[in-house]
Image (cartoon, rainbow, N blue to C red):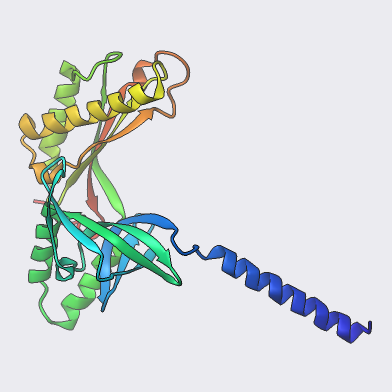
Length: 264
């Protein structure tokens, strides 16, 4: 084989491998995934969702996409909504299935309080180029959260009871939150490494729920501003055995950098 033919043959093989790699990188039809983020644009039946890593996802709506507005702290009640309820600025969770080059939404859900906030933002946008440009910049910053107050509440082994110190720390955090507009309280519960995984998962979630309940009932924070806590199970720094510092709920008052300047 001549050098010229060998070169062409090598190039053809390289192109083939590149094509195969590109195909393998695509999700296969039927593959399921979930994306959580903020709607930044809507073009027909395609919704652009920006996640917490500032990555944009193109989500395609279909005639069978189920859209739900969740009510209450536990979000166990919901209303079925129309596609027109999806507006820029609305945080959503989308369940997706791959279909060709599209990521089609089988279900989209959002919280009622987030929907009200997005409506208020939309209603306040004047049709001037200055305000449109300003809104675009704010949309770029959404999804980048900044903590303005933090607390770590410790628990006794196997317990979800908040100690006196924990209550004092939460009272102080709630007071700071009330001085900030557009705040959201997020929390994650943890356990030490004693006990089995299933028990630790339930216990960490129950601790987070206990803190959320305290912040609403005693701290006086609006239920819509206190997000449902996540149970993370065993803390990453728990080590082996009983570790008091691992039996905790980490709580943060956060705001989007898009609205970080909106303080009272």
